Image (cartoon, rainbow, N blue to C red; front, top):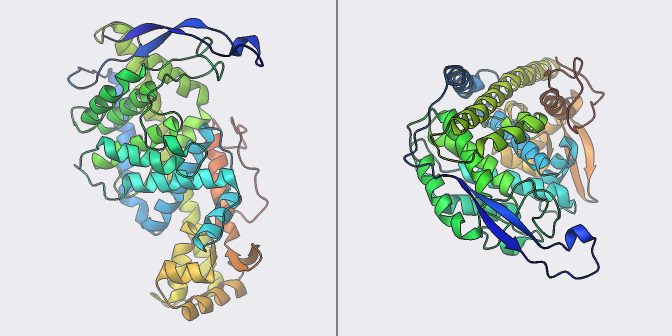
Length: 429
């Protein structure tokens, strides 16, 4: 049975802070039910929502390469999901800013943009989470700890990277006590056992994959096992489950972009998941079904916009090839055109590495792209000469703005959250 454990917080702050930060108080820490062996039933309409989401994800995963290179699309969707997941945590960074930081790092330079560095760490952590995980593989606690380690490594919280918390944490209210917290997760002595139960649940197959991913994410957020970085790690877990179940083996559905837009519904859904009482209670059933339905709808919406975005990228590539004229299949130019959607900001060196051709061949391809107006030269630091496919940066920004609109169209409804400004560049709608 889920329960609330009563505890007392004793403050050791006697002065120098506002009264609300110096309080001692009684508080309640929520301990959820274990998941393994628990019966979870889906209402008919919720089951239908889950089926819709799974059909949509499977379609994106299978048909992605019909329009553009799967690897390029995977890079874009990975970047989009990591940006959105970070934004939910309060790390704001636009496409151009992130791409410049990414290109600077890949060229061996120092990234001075702290926020961009943290988002890049989220991309690295997400990539690690999925690399080497195949359908049917087990999701083990060590993988989750390594994801978290990569998120916080090199930050001011480095000592907590990959470490399960040993202290009480909380969400909302004061930073110094849980007296006015919106939610207090389980006490630290319950955390490890709940995490092990969560991993065991993730390795089962009694539920549809989307429902399993929804519950796994909500349970992880409820456990809140780390000092910081819980949200980003918990959203990576979504993709681990979808990959392990074989539903999304090649692409990463940017569901966090939708959850960030539906912020109130997202929080309300997680709150409804945290019922109090026996797992068989009506409130438990209704709360879990509400959360799964909202999560499934977010997945479906993310796929729909991803497919529209992919079609736009294909139209951009078609326009490039018309401007370039004859392009020999398999040439350095052909390979670079295919790779640009996933790497729209690059140097000559990174281009050569990306297409696995010589520096001279990459330079010749770059010259053709410059002459055709496909790319433009930009400055990146004092020494590095870089190139940008502005059409892709524009499309990426529009993609994020579209997913930030409750209506899926900023002409019909403005972004419901902070989003990059609409760029004034050529469009391929």
